[in-house]
Length: 363
Image (cartoon, rainbow, N blue to C red):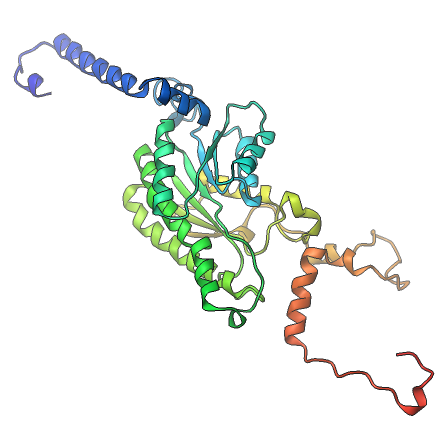
């Protein structure tokens, strides 16, 4: 541009030729950079489709809506993560599925066999070092990102907070909270580079507002995640990225344990659809909230009356005193937490004793 400024009298045609030459040189440099030898091409080929399949300009510019930008799903091999991946594929949206376990990651191919929409990328976000490695691998794909959905959660263990050592709470925060921070630190800049007001969605579980009986450690971690989402929302606005938390105030029905789950729990696919709606900003108010409750939209859980009332309409079974098995009223996934809660609340029962007149009466 300095050369152009020194020749103010140059005709418009010369200026156009100069710009065309400069742009052509820039494109040639970019092409040489992305074709950096067989080793680089092989690495990209193993991870997913080549960048040329996702143009960033022209009539098929993803930013114009003709083609969708891929969404990154962290924890894609988990129960909720699989639901998010399935929701993205159902929308025809390219998805980059990230998971630690290579076998579990490979099982996601069954959701879209031989589909160019699905890219599998092994990685983790346990700490800053792992987050930096993942961000580097995503940059190697050379594909602008349309959003991130973080489904990061450690193992669920029951137990009272006062009955467990303090080290257990530290472990819960290491598994449930700090990976979210490590992921955001390294992936938010990737969304900011796209320059299209992308969205970063965290998925949080129950216990963030009110204690979850028997899962005090998880409640503390979920409450901390809600505050982390608020802080990230404020700090990421300067980068042009919206951070939101999708709060699911109940456990989620996943594929491998659906028969043990309460029918009132939302499905993993429904949670994934709601998360994708946040990424695409479907139906968002002018001032979107930082924390979006799943119960405020999406598929509503089955009403309790429909769960308990198992007899068909017009049936007289209930009037006739027909009993329903407890397992039919309350699935196995709900029974154990209820037993634990009742054992904590109810006083111990005194042992039964026999009177001299009840020797022949069975207890």
